[in-house]
Image 1 (tube, helix red, strand yellow):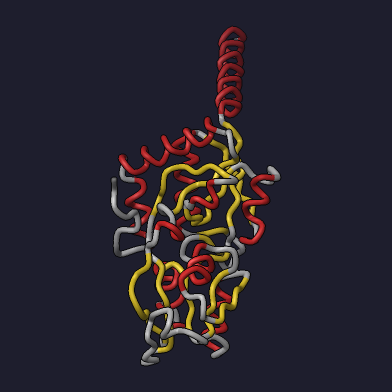
Image 2: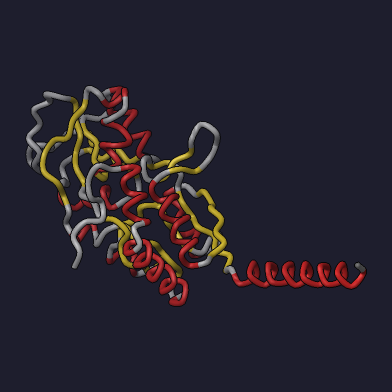
Amino acid sequence: MRRLATGLMAAAALAMLATGVHAQDKRKVKIGTEGAYPPFNSIDAEGKLVGFDIDIANALCAAANFECEFVIQDWDGIIPGLIAKKYDAIIASMSITEQRKEVVDFTEKYYNTPAKFIAPKGSGFDISPEGLAGKAVGVQRATIHENFLRGEFPEVEIRAYATQDEANADLVSGRVDLVMADSVALLEGFLKTEAGQDFEFVGPDYSDPKYHGEGAGIAIRKGEDDLRAAFNEAIDQIRSDGTYQAIAEKYFEFDVYGPTS
């Protein structure tokens, strides 16, 4: 009996050791996200991060064998926070643009959707630079959409907000005439809600590479090529094994990945 007990204790010790080694093999990665951009990332009534970005991030961490922790950061400071090493990567619907690539590196895209305007139903706005001259347009600050408006609609009165929800709220209250943002964020996060029932998309889709980039990717500090490569491999894995599609179908009734090259 003593020999058997001794053998069981030894086996248990080896199992604990193996478990500890496995845990140590996992790389700890902190992920910065905004938590204010439904349906991609937001905070639910219980204070939990939820959304497409969050589910994709968790799937990527599992695929890459990372132990991941989320850090919530206001959008205005999300790139400075990465550079300051508050976190190791940004997964927050950040578009891959040439301007941003000057200061951070990106993985390949994990989705790509166009931008649009929304306005009160029946507004009859002429959606052109001339037609919107003098109109107040709400947009989230420090986004590709603000840059697009400043570059292509120079005569509009731009009102920039810290979050997309704030811009949408001012549209409801009549403080702005239109709002511009990602079309999916506007559809799922506003138009399908009770507050958005009196509003609609107006004008065309906008996907100008000069402003809107190549889709949303994961931002990494310059030079951290091993981390970027690991995330790229994980993106390819969840795309090929069906995990990506299963997550996307929870949130969308259409393809958000966009064209494949």
